[in-house]
Image (cartoon, rainbow, N blue to C red; front, side):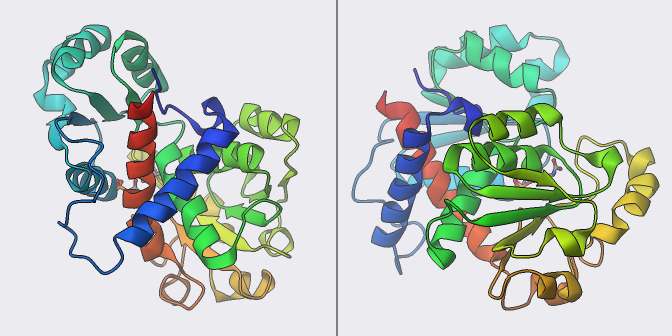
Length: 308
Ligand code: CP
Ligand code: NVA
């Protein structure tokens, strides 16, 4: 059985095939109304549970629409409204849901909940974000980069800001897809070194550069994310803002990157904090393609999970 738990836990050839398949599926739908069923209906007669223990706009809508386009049906469940939120174990929840549905996507807090769900489910499980990683987002980002700039292998990606869950999946992707990644941010908010070391061991050049303008030199892609993630304590907001302010992506920073560098943000963005309006709405920004590509990338991920 194939779970999609993290980019570093999935074979590079399978990751490549998913990106190529996502692109092909996207191309065949070009210009069609969103509700048009795909010609192939791999999720026909399939039910997918989408569990959310945190808020979501993109993940929720893109999974729901993707399942419908492929002929399946969804159940959107909120953790707090399930017995899961009232003391039932994640293992028992996995066993029960596996009797009803064909696939489970979960957005949760602690990574152990995701892993326990996968361990006890007899259907595939997809990681829709944990405190530690966000692999579906980065699959959409790779698809987006390649649509605009060609193969990502050998490119230079710069992450500016918090070394958070999305950054972690980007670092894992550097190892699996063979691109270089420079992290620029304050020491206190560095990504976990285990991610960095693992990507380096796979041959990726991963650098940590404290000066953001130095870091973005030669960058083909500049990425950032919110300074305060859903799992961060609100009481830490002021400290985080103070630490991260020098890493804002603005016109000056984009001008220091390679000509034609792309800008990405997984969204939701806090305009005027981690990124300015001019960059968000400027010619280098591909943020809404990125959001759209969640749909296509996740359709390919779901197909891969169910193909086994
Ligand atoms: N980027 C992303 O995962 O967005 P949502 O939180 O809206 O799902
Ligand atoms: N780092 C953000 C990503 C949201 C999609 C968070 O975890 O809140």
